[in-house]
Image 1: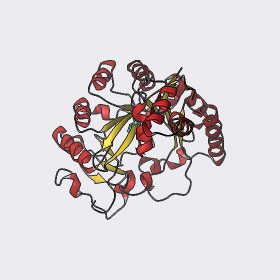
Image 2: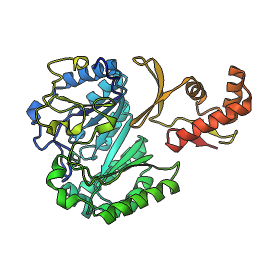
Image 3: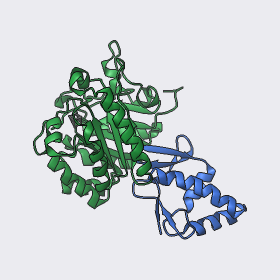
Image 4: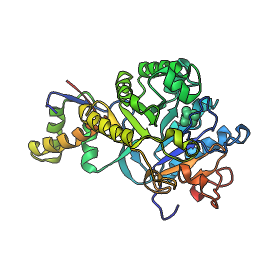
Length: 280
Length: 91
Ligand code: SF4
């Protein structure tokens, strides 16, 4: 950490628990158990240490961060540390009241995942009946409060055709940005590869739709696009290089340079319980 | 941008002094933009209450530069932020 420039963002995986069960989930196949999740005080200390190290942005993620009971305390702690705080959520577990509390403690931004543009598709992928309808309610509350919103759509073989509707939906929800990410093959996705892999035709069509929409929606909706990835057997170099812009802290306190690193054999990781973040 | 339009930073976009790197940055959803002295000077004038015309006049007087040059710089810089949805502009 002495020679590398300090990272600007940290992803805090508060829990691996999630009411959904998407087939491409980036949760490690061996999930951290609830009993091993970090206590609130440890996260609070880590957020302060991260800010002192030069981290500017904190992404609260999971699993489903809303499954974590201390979410509002953690957002408050992140704000106190001066971190720009982003909640990465499926929306499940958020109520209108909880969102108002998050607003009051200073949450900066919400990234809402999108599995599909209708209940049949979204709930089939998420494996959670009623999840889609709930998500639409959550989107409505988010808009009423006025949180800046990014939609995060993960595309794969069975929902790629819904991309045009996803773009419309993003606009209707008042999102400023949409991330259109073709599924990346690590974690669960590698195990479900055949069902998820888009066809070459689909991949081409997706790129065409994105290119057209970027011109048409310029200044209204920003579209960040991760194209299909056919030949990668190795974990992606996340965010432009190991640890240079991103750090991950997992529910049981391991510090990883990026998401896929845990699956590389022969690497062990320091834990934030044992050492201050600056030493790692 | 027209001189009678009002630029403003929307919710979720804010100026922040990075005490570790000792620079000003613009924090936005999932992005951080480092600002040079010019970028910081421009954004320091953007408060949603002053028009683009007032802002450029003030900057020109402040740094003693031709207003046309300032307008050109501001248009490029603020236009780029606007395209990323980091800046709102209202009539
Ligand atoms: S919503 Fe996210 S954390 Fe939950 S199962 Fe889907 S991909 Fe995994």
